[in-house]
Length: 353
Ligand code: 6CS
Image 1: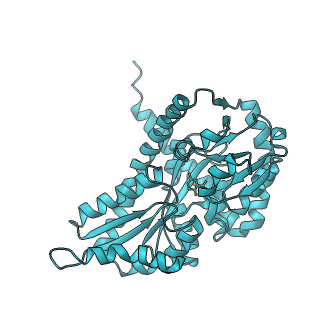
Image 2: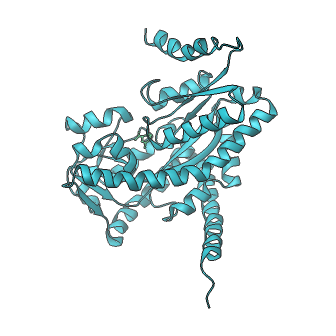
């Protein structure tokens, strides 16, 4: 029954589009996201749709499916692999079950503390080439990765030291490395799909969760927790993927168009996520002035950093030699990005008298 509904849902736009007054059915590309309408991923997919429609003169319509309409993140990845979807976001927090190496993006205190550097590093050609191969092996085409903001803990109790995690049932995404990461802090991590987190918190099945500010606002997690804790330990990173057979059948012009749009959106999405995260923190402050907002000190962060070190070894055990190689590639990508961001800052700085 569920499958029949899904097929109907996916084919409906095709049927509708065949009814164009010209009689010439428009082409439909389906883009599923792991977030709701109004999210960072939605902004990405909507801009992608707008640019595709503009550049194909309306020949291609991109339909965006928010989370829930086609199932969980795992279901979306499966549909992308099967070719029922042409594009989808695939966050390492869930995709790590299929591609263990991508869990490098989930490690704490590994990437830069400057989100501009991380955004720049995610464009690195060496990194792209490596991820291209990993995704291809699993029947997916890697298009890009981008950050969606710093991860923030929302909890019932104040957490300033790993010992405060003791006994906390803490919701994480479903990749095994995340369980290991919060076990290292002493928590009892609980993997759950995104759409079940609010009720989990409300019914006290879990005591806390972690996500960027924009998500905490749009999913209303702030309504059912007391503290927002900013540890600045990791950014939420997602990836965008396509179906390899679909891409292979595109004309060279269309293929180039997709690459150019993805490239253009890389800068735009950085600005959008930055704005969403700032604006929505204000929304939360206004909606719930009693919410405790805690920024960990350097000393407090150090205690978490120290505990997180053992998880790097676990990552290499899970992801093998290619996981180790990816960590090295990330190090090089960050170093190159730091140099580029530094140069841009120097150019922007007013010349000394
Ligand atoms: O926590 C999650 O599961 C989700 N969080 C975000 C911000 N995006 C997608 C992901 O599935």
